[in-house]
Image (cartoon, rainbow, N blue to C red):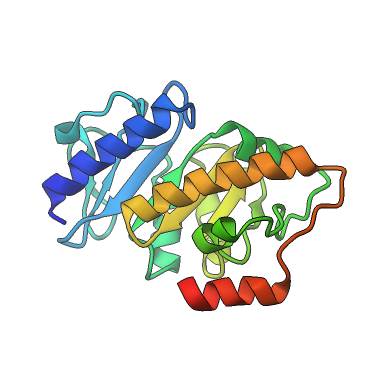
Length: 211
């Protein structure tokens, strides 16, 4: 896919997320690797529902801003995933309501707060998704913590902030972020009961079959 095609797809995907309430105002940011080894990322203080493909921020391979509007202040969380995961072709950070709600709960398992309730959650998000301790938005100190977690996880929840999800492609990352929000909804609906979850063997089978 060319950079022009990636820009157009980013605008389309971001608008879809915004229209369905996965982000509000100027919340959330999305990035994707470009064919030349650089990155596109949504500009700072921009709405995912009102992006201009020509003004999307361009970063070089060292994450330096080289073109377009000023990049999101959350570049560090995106860089943490790209440097930790060679398979990360895109990163999506949202403030989606239900996943963020899970990130605010004090009594969940911080190593893996949402159990494997459905196969598509496992297929899209993976075996585990830890919660990362709270950092002020844009705080560079979060990078090393996210990087360490991302080595063994495709997605993380930022405490009291929201999800950060990676994928091999932009479409993969967006689909994973959507699946995470649905899994959070199921988790909150079933909270306090004893739901049947997928077994470790079933999780292994999904990951072996679908990667």
